[in-house]
Length: 143
Image (cartoon, rainbow, N blue to C red; front, top):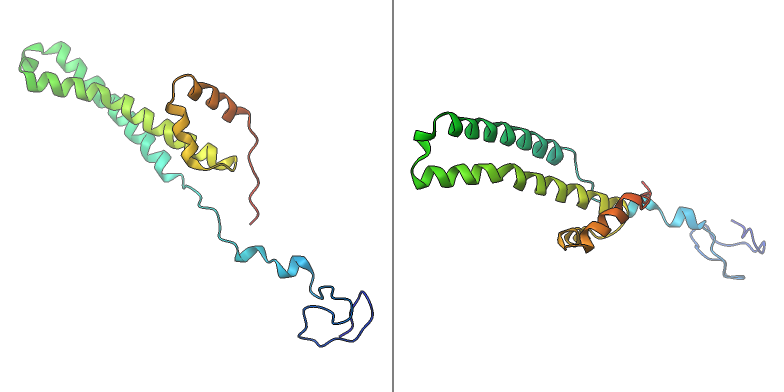
């Protein structure tokens, strides 16, 4: 084998030329990107699951609230009143979780640490951060 920079003969197993010291292997071949760990990609299943749960919980809450209006005598004790109030909060909680996971995914798309999604929960700062996330370009991941 001959060094392509200085023309000096070198052994086939050498990585550097003994005369000029330049690498004999191209940098692209040496830095193989397949050795790097792949970024963790969130699947669509959690989003689909939260969407289904959201729709089902909204429909069930509508049915429960409508039955409370039609049959008020069934919901007179404290326990049933408490369960009625908790069931009306379920869609709001599921919506918050759904939005939180969407924000985490968006933050990962722009190449930042997903723990920045906690900024969204801060008053006023969170709203400006959401606007920033809307306009930030995504980062391309080499595969």
